[in-house]
Length: 147
Length: 148
Image (cartoon, rainbow over all chains, first blue to last red; front, side):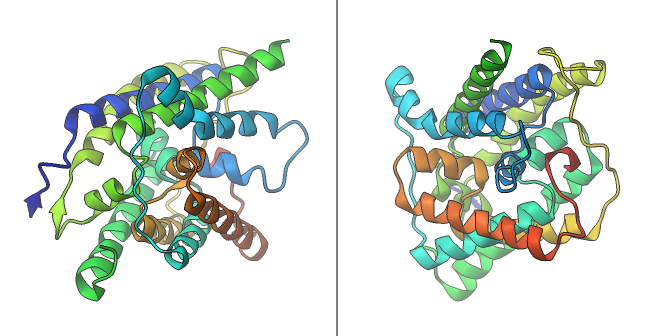
């Protein structure tokens, strides 16, 4: 295994991670809900009365985050998307189906679930990490696509 | 009045979460793929993201475990399931495969949408379709944020 020292950003990643933790903690402390983005989005598909506004507020916050980061923090997010349109479509389908079927994603299971020591979330996190490792290995090193 | 205050708070927490994704590098799909590529040049940054988030999160969820309602009032919607079910494992494996293909998951793709990337919009439409397919054809499995 070779470490990519040029891309490795331990300090901003730790700091950014702590901000994610603060946001997840505030959300459950103030509003009593798990900050799981896939669940929050999927709840908008078949809206129940009075259950949509809080979901939309959080989603809008995430969408406006890059603009406000540039405005107030002077930080312009680096977003490099190398997948082609077909890969984007397939990946989106799998992520949506998988998060719904597996009751959560990187935020709900990975951050909130592990923070509350949920055995289900530990299993889910290990499963999606393993699948991610295998997928990238197959695409990049066996088939040779994906940069 | 109180309801509006709650919505503003949820909006602000969304921004904060987005900033965390941006500062940590999680909003960049290539950085995610750099972490998932164990056999290539490996970028371990995501481990530090998880460490930071969980260190803080542990404190937050510990305080919540001592409470019976949210600070702004209202019930706590905390998942109670503890069974390791087949859908949990299969769904998470499928999720991980999609995550590995494009390097996007639901939070970061919303940030990328806000940054003006058309591919993020296509990903989100496909993601919503995937969720809907699951609800329509695999609805024996009840899902939702209270069952994480």
